[in-house]
Length: 199
Image (spheres, helix red, strand yellow):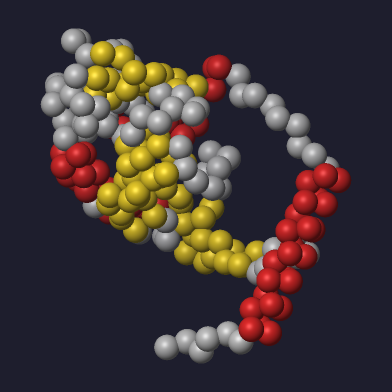
């Protein structure tokens, strides 16, 4: 069992964190990064039948770079048009509709050591940039992408996730040497992990 830190040690750590936060704030204020909206051509739209309510199909705005890297709409269990007989629900910022997504990163065999700065401590980064990002996120559907499964369930979603990612080919292609992919359920910043595969 690890030794408990003393009150003096905890106070020292808290003071260090306050100094780092002040340094981060000063750096942001010294060189602010203006928000630049991505053009609509950077996105594609896709649907999946909601595993929690089979009467509805959720519509997502999806970054093309991550979608292309992953393998397209069909591989993500999505379709390009609203499935017949389903009510459309648009998913966007601020929406509290529960959704399902895959999140992954490509991992390097030799991790990168990020040195300590005034703004943060030293840390180890396994993720590598692919298609301009360290981490990718996509909505994930239970069907094979052809829309033939009108009544998907959470169980069928997990089965499909396991079938896709528990193969050496997909692990090597998307995860590299030390990458991780997770299947998540939730909305906004509130997600729980349903399944996980590591390279």
